[in-house]
Length: 190
Image (cartoon, rainbow, N blue to C red; front, top):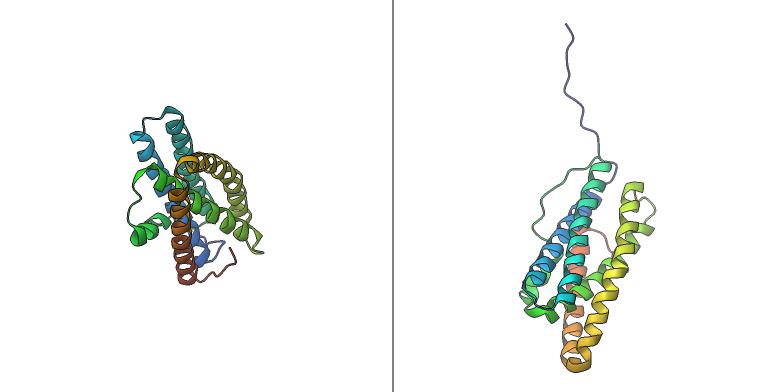
């Protein structure tokens, strides 16, 4: 008679702290994709709707890529309700209207780009996480470009309003990022 022992749990190949970050990335990408999808559902501008849908789909795909990265490092996917977007909303409320959503998206995507660049440079970053980060960085460039073009177009007729919203959201982003990295124990220059 052969005894079957339970399979040993494979230890994660990244720290628990980094796994918290990866799960946070995953949840925030999914949350952002769902928000942009809702905005696309309500807009009547076909070209804008198309950009929002593409961006939404890529954010949801990013959540899937983070899921794969977590599994690749033998981590566990953990539900995270406290996303970056939830932290923004706790300070400013829910953004109302396309201008507010896309201004906040631009500020957020800039932060993501800087943060992911910093994460990629960390010496002990697992190769699976590096691959996910590289993919994200490539795709975030496209997000930054189209949203900036849209905001620049809006600034032609709503300049002071766009400038004020961007300035206010940049300050909120700084607060959110400072608090988040302090809580997670990962202070960075981003």
